[in-house]
Amino acid sequence: MPIRYTPPDFTAPALAKAPPAQTARVERDGVLPDGFFATTNLPTYVKNADGSWVLPREPRMDGVLVRGEGNSWWVREGRRVKAGDAVVVGSAEDGREGVLVHARGFAGEAGADGDFHFMSSAVSREKPIDYTQIARMLVEEKRRGGYVLWVTGPALVHSRARDNLVWFIRNGYVQALLAGNAVAVHDIEAATVGTTLGMTSEGEPTAGGHSAHMRAINAVRRAGSIEAAVEHGAITEGIMHACVVEGVPFVLGGSIRDDGPLPGVYTDAVQAQDATRQHTIKATMAVMIATALHSIAVGNMLPAYYEDAQGGLQELPTICVDASEFLVSKLKDRGTHQAIGVVTNAQDFMSILRAAVEKAVTD
Image: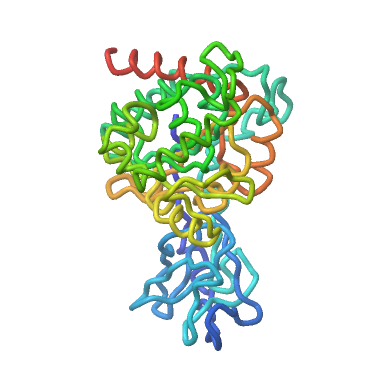
């Protein structure tokens, strides 16, 4: 169940007497002043000169606090600051310098019943997976118009989970798809050639299969774009087809190992980050499946919470699925502490979750 957020008590003497946050001016575009305050992904409040405490907009870790108009504040990446911007300086996170990082807002009653437990590790393949709860979360996000990000790796395509992802897209449970070139390439290979990395649906290699993905890339290049390939009938099914037909935005971030890449893939890492950020600032839930680099990259841009117009601050559910405990542990160690680890393969997760969602809708 979601944990109710407990806001800080700003009437407490230490916070009431705290000075407003101090700032320093940026002298050159992209160069931060000495002593700048580095943000986390936790709820953070900045005190204004009038005594008000406000949450900055577009929160994320590894950013800085920049004064906006009036009493507003924004979290910005260091490369995006401009000469003349007022950036918060200081290091204290307990409010005594006008910045409060509220780390215990979603703590709930953890630890109230003692410290010793069996099966108390955050991530383990031996722990049960509550598919019913994840399904309810997805159904609720759809019902209330939430913004669910899906971050996927090519193993989802190779493991024959693509049909289930198509189902989630077509039924309104995906608001944005964040992936790499390989996800789109092998999905389009499956749609146009019938293989992924030259493998049949039974996992058998095919003659000349090593070139199948290159033929898929060439078909999209001939059409001009993924969208045009769908429009012209070169791609008639699959994940990318569903995204185009259903109007679900996607961001494909490239890497130096990419073949092609496909038209529309961001080959500039900073541009890919900016495009991804346009979706993480709207996220109310994230599902990350079988991709280490993209999960950590998106996790670094995700706050641990979001603001709901009716319910106030809510913890941002982040589900990370992988066949190894290592990825989920690494994601949490990189700061995405709110991530819930699901240690299983992509095919099992997607098929069981789909069944659970279908059941939740009819119950």
